[in-house]
Length: 605
Image: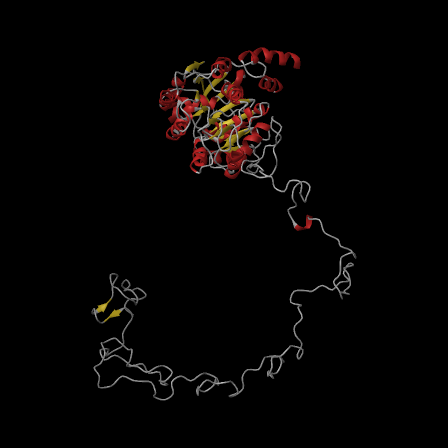
């Protein structure tokens, strides 16, 4: 099809729905020629100002269904600082970035400013953008609530409020936060709610905030895509890692879903141990890492993505031909959303679920609620059935390092023409890079400065320049000291200079302060004579066992005779306690040795 035919078809499709010419041209430039069914059904009603309740299968084009008419309605009206004209609430950061990437290039044709307001990214940049003024913000409920509480954002001028993946937001516990945010928007504003399922808390949001909504439901709540194949593969606990590695080693993009963050890291290490390169994506990673990993997967830098349910909702990656449930999902809705990463927009794909014997009953019940009829297989490593249904191949078995994204490396430009940088990052010293390419890792790789002979000299500096080794080098400890008599002296200082050891004070030439004590001559004597006060002999004797005052100090008692208590008539043996009468046993307290066994080493001796 030629470019002219594509443009004509776009005019006949999207232009017939009432969209302005800049949006139609932008869609044609991206190769989007005709609207999807949900877009064709919802766009006219949104353009007329009705509240719309949309329900469709994942990958059916809901983003453009609400984004295109929203931008058409608010175009031409400039937003005031901190007061956006439209908000789009989504459950995850990745989905917010995806929605922004899909709508921002189209909004530039209408001079609309958009900003992503999510956690894990620089709040300062988000505040700066809001202060300048933006017409549309794509936000997660938590970060938007934080900015409103700080006074950096107000929803009083919001004309259109959009909830995307509303059921997932309610499942994550955002129902009270979303309700509080919608309460801050004008009652007369337009509200759009899009979700794959409409039950539970979603129904409460519809009854509370949508006024006479027009419902467009293109598929039942539990439905499967016709172009998707479903397989349940029963494996043993011991064979599960090997079977997972063979399936991950297939050709084409593959997404592996694991139940926990720790499980994601474990599977990535197991795959690297047998030579399969994979990236791990979960909520425990920093946002710039998550953005980089997902970007590398889209660009083909990695072909295997291991993730939790953080990527199960709304994330669109082209050409994902297989989804593997390493851990079966918790319910049928999670199964449909996980599987919705493949067979998108009419493409074909397969969904495999590894089932251990103890998970068979719960997995069968989940398949019935999801409305699918999977084929059942039993497999071991190297089984031909794995190659038939998934294109599995035996990995090389050579261990490789666990892959982690290089957040310093810039991604390729987005479809809108702007460079994608890790979220939360900054443009550091643009245009002033000192090195070309990667920064050198060692000092030997850095460029040297050669001054030659044109280096300015200080006045009176006649030292030789560095020509090879003609300039003397100062080694460690080579710092010159003062000579014997060239050191400045204080007035009245006639002490001799250092000749070997420095002399100490000689005799009595040291100034004294009414102190007639003898100077140091060898060991310093302690008490002289009997000038230390003694206890009066006529005073009552102290309690038994106290030697504080009835023995002479060591320095004075030259005979080293220690006084002996009166109650000890004979020497005391190890472990003996006269006060308790006998040796101490195991239950005794205090010092000494414990009584040993008869004939032992310390048996009372």
